[in-house]
Length: 117
Image (cartoon, rainbow, N blue to C red; front, top):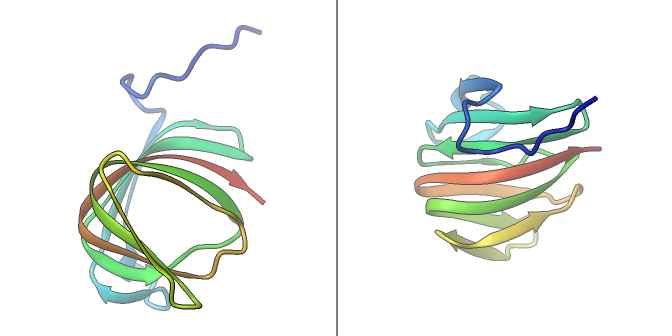
């Protein structure tokens, strides 16, 4: 079996789009629209590029996630009230168990690596 390097400039393996408002128990403000270009997914690890329009929602759990902000402005707000802003060039890791909110201030694009728990 030949293993190839995943290039985010290549055509994605899948494109997923959703209106987060379709999950009404998660959205706190706005009508965020999400688009993900998935480049790799083996059921445990997923990599891709994600874009979201402005809005605020309860953060998803059950995964570890590394993020690199390509453009835009977003923030994470922990359940304890710690607010951290992220903009172009910022990178961060969200461990499984984080409880809080995502808030997209300006349409944001990120590269991500997710490991499902």
